[in-house]
Image 1: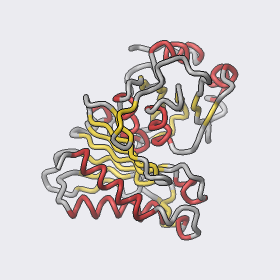
Image 2: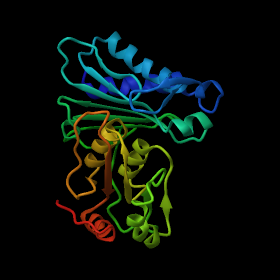
Image 3: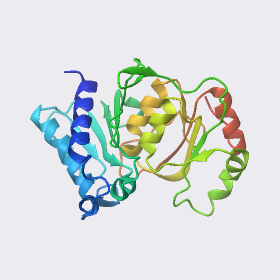
Length: 270
């Protein structure tokens, strides 16, 4: 079985096991602090256990780098890392807001740029996004692309949740220049809808994101033809570390990237 098929099957199992939990009192039960630094909720634990149980069932030789469970070696000779955010958008899931997902990626080495396969499943409706390096991006088996043409409405995704007062002024030109700013509360799924052309730009400069948040969406966005850079305009990359926090800008084309970077007072290096 190919790696992408393993990730897809794991994601589908998560969907089947948690879809009844969203918005219930049970979903939000406190299970202590997760490895990523946030409180683990019941729905997070069920989703992670689903993935881990499946990987053990098929004897997939890997190390799991999970949002809640931490680093778990499933083999003495792992062939790489499964980077897992079993529930991205936990707040939405617990409150019953229909925008949360499971994000799974595989990387043979311990850095973001080595990711070869990524899968995101929308846990509200079951839509499955996937990409393997060099093979394009797909939604439910149909190829997807970022929005290359001039859109009727230019939609900008900006995450300002918990942003520091010092960082907020940098975003002011972006916010002022757009009449159509959106933030839905699950970065992985937001990268997926960016990849299918529903959003033209996504900006997160909070320096709060973990690798688990972006690993699958990063590859899907790139394979859909988008650009994904860090706050310095360099191609996004990072080591697999729970201490590392990242920012990124995703843009549908080079012209848009250049314009956004200029408004932010930055210059792209690609």
